[in-house]
Amino acid sequence: MKVRFWGVRGSIPTPIHPDGIRRKIASVVQRVRAEDLVSAASRERFLAGLPEWLFGTYGGNSTCIETRLSDNSCILFDAGSGIREFAASLQREIEPVREFHIFITHFHYDHLQGFPFFGPAYAPGHKITFYSPVRGFESVIRDHMKPPYFPVTMADTMESDMTFVELAEDQDVHIGVGAVAWRRHKHPGGAFAYRVTEGGRSYIFSSDTELQERDFRKDEANRRFYGDVDLIILDTQYTLGEAIEKYDWGHSSFSLAVDFVTAWGIPKLYMYHHDPSYSDHSIFRNLQSARWYARSLGNDELEVYVSEEGLEVEL
Ligand SMILES: [Zn+2]
Ligand SMILES: [Zn+2]
Image 1 (tube, rainbow, N blue to C red):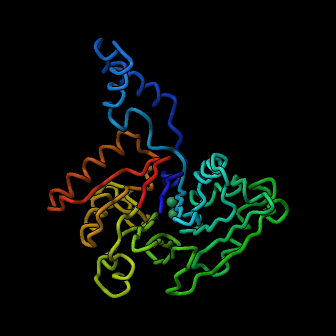
Image 2 (cartoon, rainbow, N blue to C red):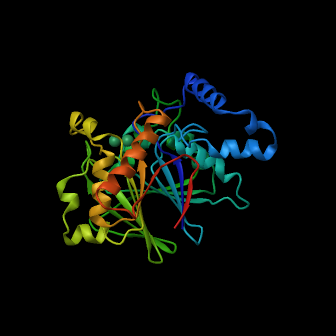
């Protein structure tokens, strides 16, 4: 399966500020030496050698992750502003997919605000199935899109075939050649993590999670969900100090996330739900600190990455 990142910011979309772009350009210019400019190859080398936080950006859209299974089944986690970029990407497909399975972690704005801009929802011949363990969640989704908050309603304008599936306790959803399981975690109002499995490979999407002692417990239900996982995209919105200051706000520190993946033996961690106050440089500093912390725990194998818009990971 392929995992694609379309929205990685938390709380609110955070486009890069013009001043941030100016500072990046100034910083690149200051690094350049005469020998870097002599040929096309040296210029390429110079660009390739720039730090990842400087040459580009981790992205500003709010949460949306795509999973494409090997039979081309399309699973989406959340419909934050990144879902608009996902829809645009479909135009580059030779035969654009027409069926979408959208699992919602919870209904905070940053996880739903892109849906009114999801083109396929308006087009007949497309099929959209929403999933959530929340009873009656169809009206939550429908009610977020109506005047005066938005000019039109879903019922009046969206011509795709739409279904809403309320997930039962311990229900796994079978989609094409894969399956999706879910688990409740701590977040204001409640939120859910999802685990996708295809042919012995699994990954977890766990945004908006305030990790608790109970998530570390090696009980049967936790083992079933967190055991034997190849990769996790996990809420790392805060530093440890911020997590203490913002106790009960529903997010985790990157250091607790490293403890968590170490406890469960998960080999790859993608830091996710970047705080809107963070620049690319501060996110990169947290990445370095998370890597350092993993080594200090003796977890030398752990691979830690920053979730970046446009990134594609093959599992
Ligand atoms: Zn959020
Ligand atoms: Zn939230």
